Length: 181
Image (tube, rainbow, N blue to C red; front, side, top):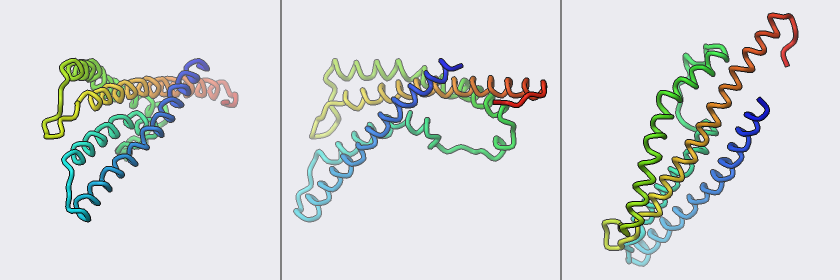
């Protein structure tokens, strides 16, 4: 179990650092919005590239911090019934729901996002605007974000497997009349 916990800690540290790094993209988005507002409102000179860049940066931001949000439990969850269950059942429910919903989603999108990126990169695909920026950086971010989410999903699954193991071990110790560690 120590190896599994070390793997989970390693994955969590990487995603934690990357999540903090990717969070800085918000400042880039804010800067571009600020430039747009100043140019449009104060100088009466709007730019063609700012709206596209804001959308592209925001798309990158959202997908790149998904794994960080998943790790930090930042997504909406309905815990009304879940909180009533014992810890062992909670771990089992997490594993079942991850295997039914998250794993197929990520396993289906990960190879598709890679092909999406490669097609955009090799064909020199451009966005549909006068600015004509390349689309591949955003599509690469999609792949990287999904890859990070898949790796974080492995960590979360392993944490719940060790949680089940710990719960069963504690129950065994309690049945033997010993104190759980």
